[in-house]
Image (cartoon, rainbow, N blue to C red; front, side, top):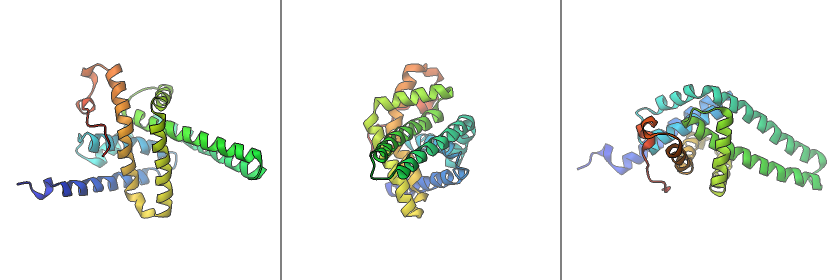
Length: 221
């Protein structure tokens, strides 16, 4: 007879608690703004290792391990993300300045949507890549672009979902205590197959940590 702690119900409660803790850590470490990308890498790493692979022992320990190990590239891409956001705001500001009824405003709005979608897609891929590999910044960007081209429509659904998560969190702030963790856990179902394929092609088995060699089910559910 299974104990209460081994029951499916308790397992779901534990998972929600993990979502809560990762979300809380994500929010706290993102407060300086330029650390948002670094927080993304830590949240992704924690959700992949702790929940998808069931390989870690401490959510907080896993999170801050990734935060500490990736801080250089994390801050670099964080600053670039802020600059990308400023450019995005500039497009909207220009569209507003020329008048929403004009052709130029519509052009800038389309440009904003395309540019914003690509930037978010690349950043999501980068978060997964930086959390897992020790590569140069340029190498990480190239790999992120490669991943984007492999499954663009699947990635697009996660970009749209991310925008939805941001909007819902703005409307219902209490949900920010679970949505970030839940989102990054869901994102592992897109990124992990791509990361595993890259690992198998470029790394000898003896150099891959045991938990990274595991291959859990790739179907979401």
